[in-house]
Length: 138
Image 1: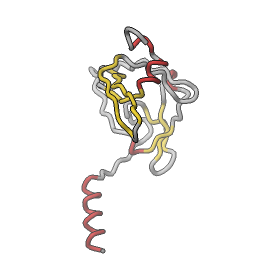
Image 2: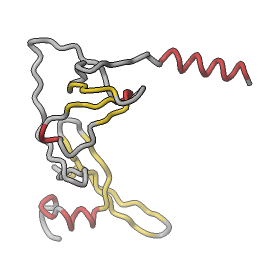
Image 3: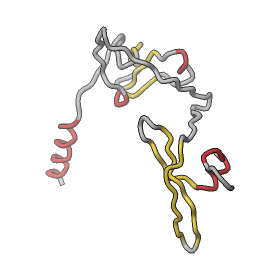
Image 4: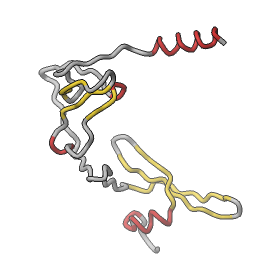
């Protein structure tokens, strides 16, 4: 048992990096203060002010600033309940699944062209919510 625990620990330690930040360091946003041993307060832009501004260190990556490096922020609107309005772009495929004698129609929905994010969704629900994606007869 000890040998197994030791081996697992060595595998985990090999991938783990000691990571610490200080106030003023940049992690694509500026750290304003250290809250605890693994939590940091981040200076968020005004349009993200409704988000919680304390992050665990595992969510942060150190950034070394380059004068020529310019970031363009995505225009993301976050609601007060921390959800976003994301609309599907296109229906790519459809299929009918047989489950315990039922036929369930699903469609592949493309949500984001840049990341090629796609999911399988229920055809009836998608047709109700987004009828413009289904040309022709309803």
